[in-house]
Image (tube, rainbow, N blue to C red; front, top):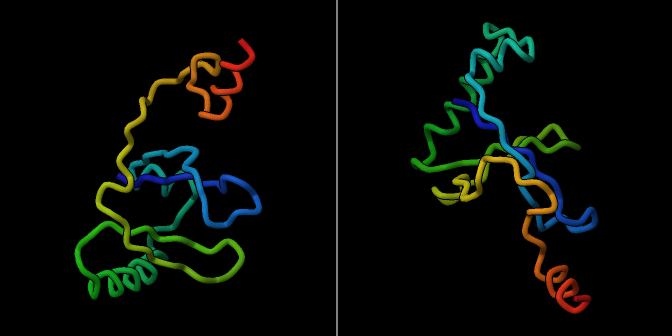
Length: 110
């Protein structure tokens, strides 16, 4: 399975703090068909990645494409970095937990 994560900055001026806003899991063949990917032309890129990963230790890695440059970065992450402890079910906005600051302010208003 292929898992894509969508990430945003917590604040647009802070480039050090990010939040995962969602993930999607795809079957590789379905995803390739969805983006009209020609698998025959991908083998060179895959071969290059395999050469890089063959030299690395076993582990969990994040491949990051810099949106402003023609650079791909590979980061090693903890094995549990992509485990979710959140429910997959939708929680209505009025039932979601408030951030600590908002909860304290709400308690003062009551």
